Image (tube, rainbow, N blue to C red; front, side, top):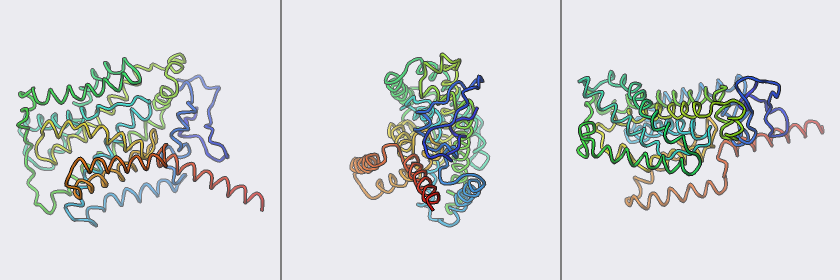
Length: 374
């Protein structure tokens, strides 16, 4: 059975192709969910298809690798590091919320947990700063994934608005725990990270490479999930959870698995963030703005698509950093940032990727019709 990410777009309609005769574990092809993602032909990369897709992805990856060599200014590479971390975090958020339809607004709990797990591992192992410390990033992610299991088991017993409220409550609980569990977090004093031995001119290069690897992993996981039967089950849950359950999908297990995957990837982003800052403090590790930002990035780029959160992060994070530096009043920067987002959403309510995907299909249809007329 072909998923909606694998169906072709040779026709002139926006209908997704399904194999109704299949009785495998992929129970339904959610038409509405597929329409929302609006990138059926390429699994999230609407700008190209076929062999050209891989050439395009290779060019993008090469540009990302060469970026710190071309733009070596520390201020520029610092913004690039945070942008890549948000690419990973937004892609991780989209892997669960975008595919399943469960809007989680508490992922900062995993971002902060990853930071604290990283700091505790470095302290417990007595490691010094250096490249070897990046080996703890996957372990921090796994530790955060373990933390996400009971959180997801509890939160996913609810749906819709109740789930959103619970995820917000979980975030504040984790933030309060960071202040009060001094034996684990050192409270408001913060936990120091080992200092890297690198020179100032090369300091950002190592963290840029680490952030890029984490971002690539997060996007690759989103791509794999989106094109798998597991991803189809998530889309079925988003389309109609009761119907999916009636057709044999173990919805509780699928949702919890995706939730843990998101927590693991988000924890890895938080671990790199902690090492880059050099210390971990509760207000920085558990920041409510993080939850809003990753959601806005996914919505701006295109919820449920693969490339949408990437594009959203590449646009919004540099803009946010620019506003923070140009506007001395932090509140004013947030107001301008929010107003810009509302303007974009007003013109592109489905996101950039679905909107441009629709334009691309219309151009193909017109080209086909004009060719037929000739």
